[in-house]
Image 1 (cartoon, rainbow, N blue to C red):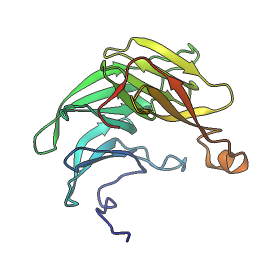
Image 2 (cartoon, helix red, strand yellow):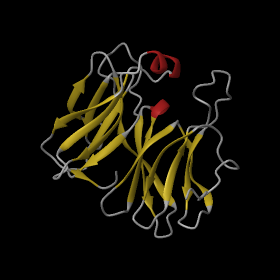
Image 3 (cartoon, rainbow, N blue to C red):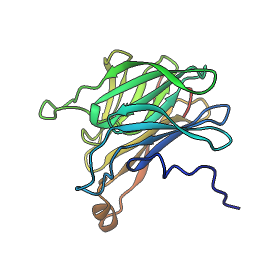
Length: 209
């Protein structure tokens, strides 16, 4: 049976996007701040919305630049959010009541192609060394970045764009990447070429997802 858990319509400013759920059932939901498929939609700051296990809704973090993928570290103490239009990863401490504080830069993201002004992160995941794998649809790559911004590994795609990634498999040493022909709805409808690619990595996944 489908049951509504929480109504976000009263707080969301734009499209609801990626979500992560903590061990205690608290959900953190990205609100992009605008309707990304509506060019005339007002551009407003994004936010991460917190939904408690009993369905209470509140703003956990405001003034985010198109919050997208979210990560919770293995100890449950840190949340990392990918700010797509900000070209960065931002970290917060997770308090015992699930609120977020101590906002800080986790890693600036530099494009591989100098013709691009920034690298917009989409889906993200964490490994056991504290590095983040980032799906970069504009740069058509998935890359591994250390805290502070140093990139250690990168895989590029010729005919598709990566939109999400996760470390899975029995030992969490398989990087699974969701790719598609485009992020534009009309293009995807006309030429659906979505798939999941897999890469072996040395350092296993950690935390959520």
